Image (cartoon, rainbow, N blue to C red; front, side, top):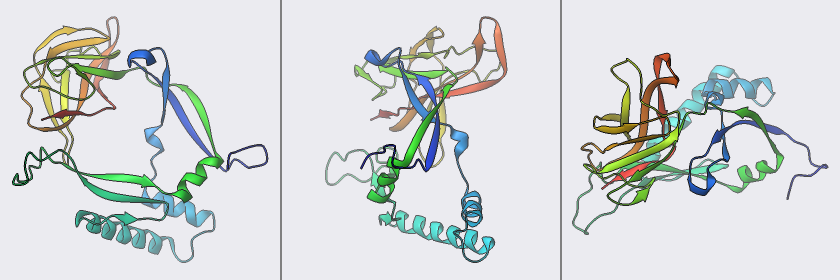
Length: 247
């Protein structure tokens, strides 16, 4: 089924466009929803009550939803997939094991959770109109080239050269925290600073990958740079949308 003039638009998603710096996609834009559009449990429950869907008290609805989600999280961490009707979530163990005798290493084999949309949620996409609200902040990290492995947006090799490409990513400013970081993904995101930088421009930063334990990382730049001699009062963190693996 496709949306046409006889089918009503029931929902709208507002997005902003971000410039792409990936190979043949340079000069084009990709869409991202606004992060501030996140809704809390309380806000969703309130909206349901206001639209007439809820029966009973608002406080009870919030309490029971939270209890359900707490139990769902408990089941997920016990290895069960949980089917929420519109979508399901299942635990996933990343990485590879070198042999059947190898014990699990939390850094090498991180636990994550995968989301899968089901037919009822997919059908709703036929009733969504996407509205573009213009260009987002043009600061972005487009790609990271790891010289040792010869890969783009895939791996990091500690001790080897990397080149970071993007828009307005120059690590500049008088704040001592300004610099390039690799943020390890996990229960607590650990930020590891890359201290050896050989080139630092608005579109490219070249340096040496610091000593990183095995795991999954995002590249990031903390900068006060705006343009010319203009600087931000507080540093802004620019994170890659992609993740990088250290074996």
